[in-house]
Image (tube, rainbow, N blue to C red):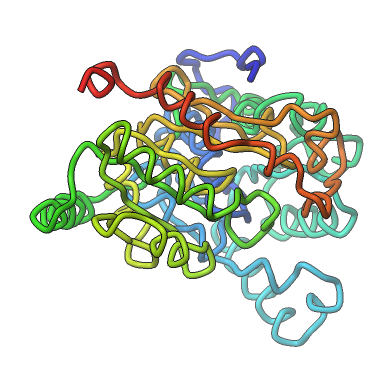
Length: 383
């Protein structure tokens, strides 16, 4: 994947007298993780300002222990996904309560880290920005950013990586940083839990070094998933060819149980058993991560694990592994002329791909194994 030139970095003096900043990122875990370099830029440029972030309850743990924000405001944006849902009494009460909370905090700036893609979405972000009462409203402008006071052009999905877009948005406020790596959630308790869990596993037949396999893709789009039987074949070959232990991760809807039934008995199944900081702690100890386009993939990159990411209908130029030179990653794609078909230009496109899903099925187990040969640390290959 070709990485476009990154925005200017380096310590810069603040250009605005900001006392309180609200960052809006009402999105999934991976999207929140891709916003962490921009949060770091704001934190380093405006260290005296209160920096709050508005996220969904599901994604909030992605910022645990990062030290990037002062307060995390949780808001269930999914009850506002459709106009009919947004007009329900319970939704209107929630919106009014949020508006009152934001107005009381007296933000000087609201930073919208979203593409203004859909008409109803644009209306919601405009309403949120005005409800906060901030004099500065920063974001991406694709021709519909009429409510923004500070903006940077949106050239479409994949013209820049999402990380680069958000760095450019905060740069309109003078915020820059030399460290554009992703931040992973962390805590001492999570590190202790991971070490204890892996040590117990080793005593019952598990082994290090180990590979982490995530067969899911989150619930937003099942089209990103690789067939579970190929993950199982890959797992068996990783154990046979490279003597790697196997750790399986994900949620109840990620087909992990089906994968576990086809894996060696010594595989450690952590599906549904980890918090995000605990999962990050496991990934910090991994020799390899293999998975599709998902929040867990971005978490693996942030944790520093070598990553092999399998991409089909979604846009790797926008959401591929952002290593920032601190970790290693390989994106595998079939290279079909119809790829990507989701999130291209200014449109969402085929979020669920096409019926045949040829782009994911065209990725073979041997393709992944060849990538493993490239990305595994030399001392593991020699073993």
